[in-house]
Image (cartoon, rainbow, N blue to C red):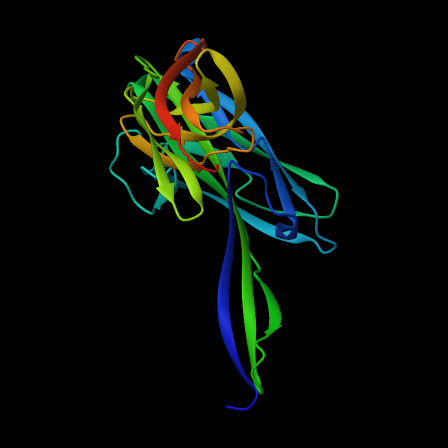
Length: 277
């Protein structure tokens, strides 16, 4: 098996998040959100910018694909869909293929027509920007005579959302519990999205003893798909709990409703510290 090389295929995907530096490309904005109810026309046009960060020119192609968000907050990509809220066949964009060089920008113009034909609620697609020529990297494996070849393909996903008609964004905390693990205490929370459009939330956890605020720390934010739920566990920050006793943990979740108005929801759990924290 001397001189043998094993091929490994890698894929870089940024779904509305920061693109890793080694991806050699950046996009802005990282997501497109459109409220069709605020438009006077029956169509919408917008654009995203693609910036190259590679010393060599890079060739990209653009194509759409449907996706959903599961109960773990993960994006699930679907090659084909009969979902009426799928914008994949309704979105148009130019150019569909282009080359960018370091420090230069390329605009991809987006058009969605016949907005009045879209179903009520959230309609969506993912617009992918993918390099045409994958990169090869040789990686030593530590085993004599055997190497590995990493095939890296950069693919950036920009989610496109269109809310239309009767849209509802309503969140609820179904439960907020405290669970114990080997490495400490965790909050276990289930958030429901009871409307027909996603809820993007942020929040904090307050630690109280009686009416006194002992500490406050950031709760990891997330996105819950319309009509879905999200289960999240996060380690409790107990650094400022110095004494044993009865405490209250309060989750405070914030999100914007369908009218752009900030909503806050709360849920509490009891924490009894009997020994060393």
